[in-house]
Image (cartoon, rainbow, N blue to C red):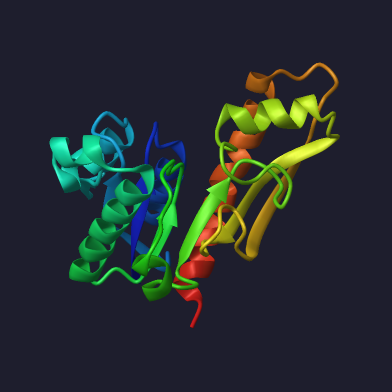
Amino acid sequence: MKKIAVLVSGGGTNLQALIDYERSHAGCPYNIDVVISSTKTAYSIERAKNAGIDCVIKSPFAVMGKENAQAASREEKNIAVSDAILEECKARGVEGIVLAGYLSVLTGTIIDEYRNRIINLHPALLPKFGGVGMWGHNVHEAVLAAGEKESGCTVHYVDGGCDTGKIIVQKKVPVMPDDTVDTLYARIAPKEHEAIVEGAIILATQT
């Protein structure tokens, strides 16, 4: 099995899908070695603890200190956090990184050192509705506003851009005429769980 790190920021339902698959499939090719959270309040941390998986916090405050983080630019924070995540992953011998609802941006050396070994789950059918600000309910609001007939989710490799890497897995669902953000999300969420597991398996079995 290949060691992976799962990066999270929120409730962690996609993390849970990865955990459940690993626990229920003897031939699972990945092992979640560590969960890395961008915030100390994410419920994902409880999911990791319940599964007996190490969890660390890599927020700007955690890696830079409060005063330095408050004075830093967004780019400086992203670089500091990305470098701290890289250090953590290298120290653990992590072979692949899965972004499962991770709301920060990885940048700098980690992109090169883990090139084609970092994947991200996005809640829309890329290349549509990607880029800065397109996360969570913002995406579903944009899909509904555009009058799209279908939506879904995408797993893609992470490169130097924002939601621009090569697509690995896509799952589609219809958009209904009476959909709200919540009903559309509810239809996409199970597909996200399938897609993130498929993406992690591909990541763990690639040469």
